[in-house]
Length: 402
Ligand code: AMP
Image (tube, rainbow, N blue to C red; front, side, top):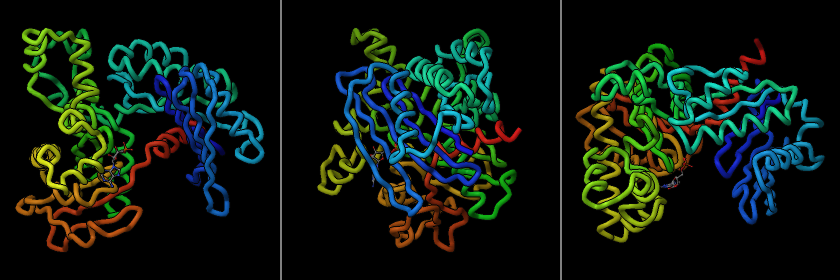
């Protein structure tokens, strides 16, 4: 059976079509710049002989409904698609960023669920309305498919209250839902399961620290297979230093900027989310370029990398104290999977905590899941490619089989 995974943003829709339960990916792609002068479609087909072909189309695509119609046409295309009718899609799995406290697992989308999602939009005003739009247009087109919502926050709903509450009066939690929720849940969940499987460990006794380093970065403490703490909070702004987001700051910076620098809340929001992190420190949010500048001896790049790595190490120390025994340290996402340099820097000096990596293994040119620790290391150090879309398809599957 075929499961389509959709990730709708405010001006983009990413899609992947899986054959399940075999987990093979048939098609993937994205429509970007929806509603702009020229939108861009990138479409990939994974052929049976192992080859992959890509096509790019530029066109005027005014909205999400038109975008999904274009995607469906590609899925139906005799040369570029792999279905004969929209009814061949048994289920659509939707990435939904914020599930609040209401959703601790995936759900079939009903009118009541849609009402709840709309109510939760205040917690993720940039993401949830776009995710809702994606569900609405998919329901219009795939009238015979089950629609399933899979939440970025759900995996972290196992955090204890002393980890997720803020030390502010209780009424803000009770009346306004202000607490840490955590994000990247499907990624942390996927790599945790993969790591436990790879190490032949029982998931329900598996302790790990999962480090997702991409454009967005977060780190999660996993105890007995579930999330017990994570670095992102109410929104994906807190925690580690990211491409354009500041991560943790002294909250008084916001008060200072508003009071003494005459900045509006919208300006501060823009500053901390879009103009800070690596971009704020170096002018560039792509770590590859910053590492090159580091190698050339540029002091700004050196400081940015020192800060980026220092913050990750601080969290590793904190989470070791949180979970006690650590079976594995997991690196994942764009930076975590591809940058031996950052992995080395993160592990440097952690030998006394039982974290010792091997240079040759770390720098080895393997793809797929692998371990890079030395035989003396108490903690396994793994590089685990994440696959959030596959995890969404996996979490959608039980609703079909039920
Ligand atoms: P993601 O959000 O997981 O797609 O990760 C994207 C980010 O990964 C990009 O912005 C790059 O900065 C980073 N990245 C990818 N490959 C490398 C690499 N070899 N070294 C450092 N950073 C990388």
